[in-house]
Length: 79
Image 1 (cartoon, helix red, strand yellow):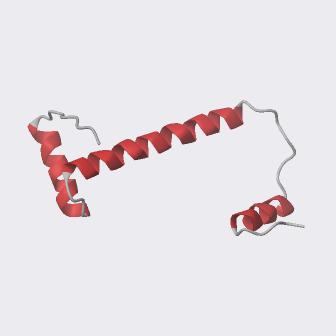
Image 2: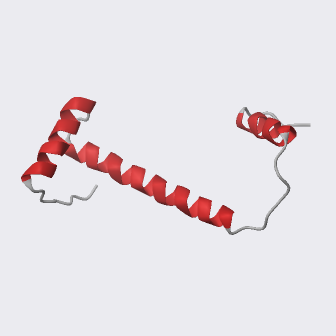
C-alpha cells in the first residue's frame, strides 16, 4: 500500500477526528478511505443512471419483471 499525506486546516481536521472517535474508525486513514470508496460508488451509480437515461425506451416493467429480478437476486431462475 502506498502512502499519501494530506494537510487539513484545523476545522476539517477536528471534524475528521470526531468522525473517527464517534463512528468507530481505527484511524483517520480508514475514514478517508471509506469516503473515497463512497465517492467511487456515487460516480459509478451516476454513470449507470446516465447510461440508463440515454438508452432506448422499453416497455414499462410489470409484476412479472420484478418477480424475475427477485428470483435472480435469490439465486433462482424464473420460469
